[in-house]
Image (cartoon, rainbow, N blue to C red; front, side):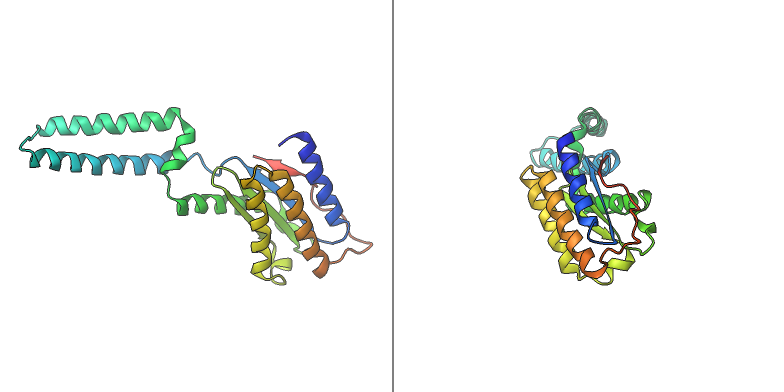
Length: 207
């Protein structure tokens, strides 16, 4: 994102936190994993299954290659597949099932929630807005103080806002809208008082 977009999001966070004792933190990840090993596993399995199908087809046509030939062809195919994954990292995620991608992205969201100290605010009212671009994944991670007071449907609405804007290449707009929505939820349950202090930085982090 551009410096101007970073500034817009930071201002949206400050405006939201002016009305609440809660804390909002934003993180956007280009990807939540390199996906080399899971992609290599699935590609290798696929190559082996394809080689079995090819061998059976050749046998059906009365052509039986030598076992060493089949083995060398398998090794060559797997080697070429792994070489492509190594030199073209953007292709790796194509070979990883969606469920596994989301699992990695969720784990990264929880990791960022802890690493950025969103979980140690005084009233346990920290909220992390997380987006992982490669997986097209968004999540709201809320600390116990606010999460037990807000229905899951409200968080789902925030996630939809992030996903819809990110899909339209309007990620900054998505964060601004999501921050405003989370700020309204926090204000309802934890309005700002005169003793409140800002416990977390007001900006979006790109990793």
